[in-house]
Amino acid sequence: MAKPTSLAALNDLAKTTKTLLAHFQSSLAPTNASDPSIPPPPKPLDAVKACATLLKSHTTSLSLLLITPPFTPSAIMTKIGDVSSGPLTGLVGAAVAENSLGALMQVEVRAQARQLIGSWGEVVGLVGRMAERRQTAQTNGSGSAKEKAKDEGPSKAEKDDVLAATGVVWESCDALVKLCDGGIAGLVVKKAEELRSTLLDAVEELKEWGEDVDDDENEAEDSNDGFEDEDDIFGAANKLGKGDKELKEALDKSVKKIKMVGVLYQALIKRRLKTFPTPAAAAAKTNGEASQNSTATLEELVKLLRSIPEQVDDLAGAFYNLDGDEAKATLGKCCGQAKSAAGLVKQNWAGADDEFTAWSMKWVDALDKAE
Image (cartoon, rainbow, N blue to C red; front, side):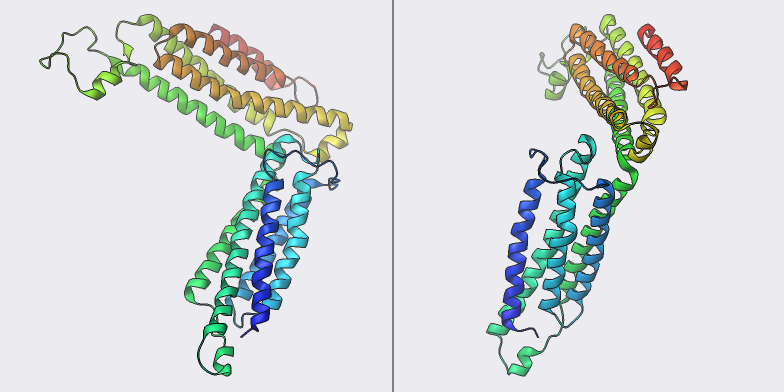
């Protein structure tokens, strides 16, 4: 078995590494600005991918050291040190460097890097606990020095913990690699699809609410002298009245228009987001300034796509409150933002008209006429 001094040193390293990881996570917090003092790597996403790939490899090696006897503090300490000075430092540097990834990608890389560092921290914490248990066993154990020196390897519980923690790190590394492989286009496509799904779910909820008409509003009070079931009392307060034709027409109009907005999302995903040029392709065809303008346009488009489902939530709230005027005003905002999104990328990323250009003009006209 390892010497007590070696085990103590490993336990101390685990503690100091946890402190370092906490500092890394703090620097990656959403509230922290990019660091202009850190020069961005030439290819930031490639650097992030390389760091994640290397960290996964180191984690695999470390897990084998932990579950295969004898427990060797010196080898484990070397591995932890290599990770701290290598892939983790490189990952954090690429994530916090100013203007290295673009706002959208930098936010996502930071979030996933924080998650990865957190999962690696669980592995480091596990190492510390394993070292501490062995140190305690050597100090308090009974028997001869030879018996104390015998290392029977990790317990089943320790093996299970190591494998589970390693698996979580692998998943985090794989997610970060996938993000880098997909690039900014892959990221925004994923987010737009999620937003479209949220939008359509809201439409279905509105539609179902409109079908749940209060049929009893004109009926006489029942034999309970007006004391109805509690759910009936509060549920009826925001039901669409059977005779409220004006609000029903406004609801039907809203559902129709928001469904059309969902179609716009689908078209934007196919014709604009999936066709967004990679930085290398953009640099080959245009100057750097044009590439930056495209990225800024993309980020503005995503802001609009993100804000529309929020407006639809407000629209639903207006209907639930039976406020037709507020619903009408909010629907106007939703449609206005959708038309702004279509107009923002009316032309393709090269600045030329294409199929989407003509389609978007027809879509705007149809949206305005929808009743």
